[in-house]
Every structure is written in C-alpha cells, then in structure tokens.
Length: 290
Image (cartoon, rainbow, N blue to C red; front, side, top):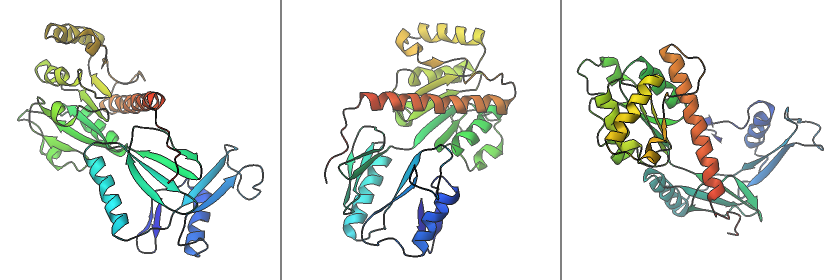
C-alpha cells in the first residue's frame, strides 16, 4: 500500500480496521520519518485488534526516501523487471537501509532484522484466436494482472478488438510470437481459435518453451487428434505432456464466459504450483545483513 497527501491510497493492507489504523497513524504523523516502523496486530496480547483467522499481522511502514541514489536503485529494479528478470528487495527494519539484488523466486523472509521479498516480472498471456471465449479470458486475465495479447489473422475480426483497453490485439498469425515474447517461465499460451492451422502453429513453439502454461481448447476427441498431429510434426512426448487439453478446470462450463473463467482459474492454479516448486528448488538464503 502507498499513501501520500497528494495521491491518496494505492493498494491495500488486508482492509478494514487494520488499514484504517495504519492510515490514521500516517496522517497524524505518529510514525518516524527517518526509519521504518513495525506495527503488530492480532495475537494473544492484542485486545483491540483480533483477526478473524486468529493469527498475527505485522505491517512494515517505510517513509519514502528521495535522492539520486534511491532513484538509481528503483530505476535498476525497473530495468530488471522490463528485461524479464527476477529481483529481490532487502530492507533493514532497524536502520532503513535497503537494496535490490537479482534473485530466484522465494517467499517473504524475515531474519536478522532484514525483511526480504521477491519481485518477479509481470505475467504474460498470449491468446490465439479472437472469439467470445478469448474476449472474456482477456478481461479476466487482465484483472488478474496478466499482460494479455490476442492474435488472430482473420480479416473478419470485429473493430471492438482493436479498441479493447485490457489487451493488445495483433491481426496476425502466432508464429514467432512465442519465441519472441512468450517463452519464459512467467508466460502462458492459450489457443482457442478451433483452427488447427493457427492453433498448431502456436503450440509448436510454446510446448518446447519455458512457458508455465500451454493449453488448447477442444473436446477429448479433438485433443487426441491434436496430439497425434503435433507428434507427427516432431514434438517430443515430454513436450506433449505439458499440454493442457481439454483446457481449464472442469467446472461443467458451457458458455464462453464460463469456459474463460475455468481457464483463468487454471492459469492461477498452475502458476502458483510452479512458483512453489521453484522456491523449493531455490538455494536463496535471503536473510543477510545489509
């Protein structure tokens, strides 16, 4: 969450009475302006704030610091994220010193008075095929903080696709898109065009890539035929095993919006599973002194 007298509140800290208390302390200048503060809520000793989950919440409040050094550090962070690199932030909660460092993914960590957390690049989604399912999926995924691109080479695509403010639209075939922009572990590729000439083109690039999710819409029979085609085109069994088809979580979906919802939920589920796996394999020891 960020707050200033000029911009107001951006983001949230759990909401409700805890957020109100944090904002009140900031507005009343009750917190030091030269170092971080830690505010604790809940737990056995807190009679005022009892969290519904029965747990305890600690909020780290950092005053904004200016100067060329801080600006340079934030610019380096932005460059790393724009280049699809993961980066970690380390904050000394006693003195307020902080720094960024390139890192593999890990969960928030607190050790030796140092809070560390991982900031990864934005998740990206390529949707192949412009139809009602794609439109709803682009809306849902955008609300889930995916940077969404939809591509379709058809000359019959409606003008509303070009005017959609929640995704980028490319009136083109998908070949080259995956290799150029959607092949890393923060990316997903979904094909919904129902045209094998278009869908297979994207899958041939996506399945051997590092994309965390590759899915194709279609029935069991259609999916079986697709696997046979892709195997005949040279894809390995290992690559084919990565394909989610039929796509999405089975919620009995029938309408385009329901299908899109099941796909969006599956994207989140698979991304979370991949992140947990990556953190388990990581050797990062983030609690280091600054």
